[in-house]
Image 1 (cartoon, rainbow, N blue to C red):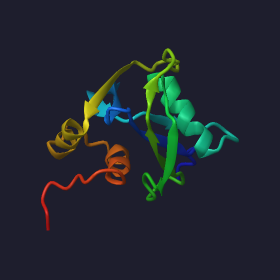
Image 2: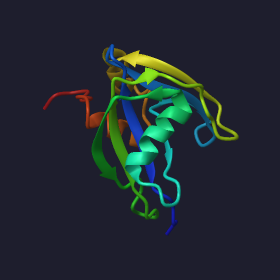
Image 3: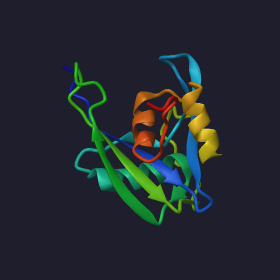
Image 4: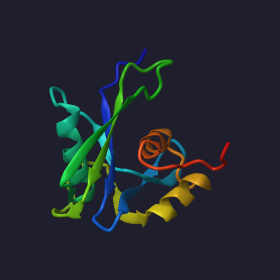
Amino acid sequence: VLDVPAWVNVVALTPERRVVVVRQYRFGTGSITIEIPGGVIDLGEEPEAAAPRELLEETGHSAARWTALGPVEPNPAFQNNLCHHFLAEEARLTHALELDPGEDIVVDTLDLAELVAAVRDGRIRHSLVVSALSRVLDLRVHTL
């Protein structure tokens, strides 16, 4: 079992209803991914404090309204942590990025149709990102 700190990730919507995304190289897949902002919850920090901090650090955005979307277990087969999903509404660019050493992030926004299309065609397939987005948007490829 891996003893892993908890994480947060954030579905951030601008006033124009665009989703704030980050593009970054992931060594595991050897590719640049499209993801939502997120990261590790610091020791002693609450998820509700970590989410706005991560959004601000990775994207420079602050949000007016926050909603907890609930946690998921990233991989309960061998990890003991949770990833807490949040919705941030009325997100606006307010600060410069404050990236951790080794982070190389490009910030972008996608309109809702572009975002859903990226999930459906596989350009966005990080499971924790898809999980968070599914709590906000209908991502179904096929209807039942």
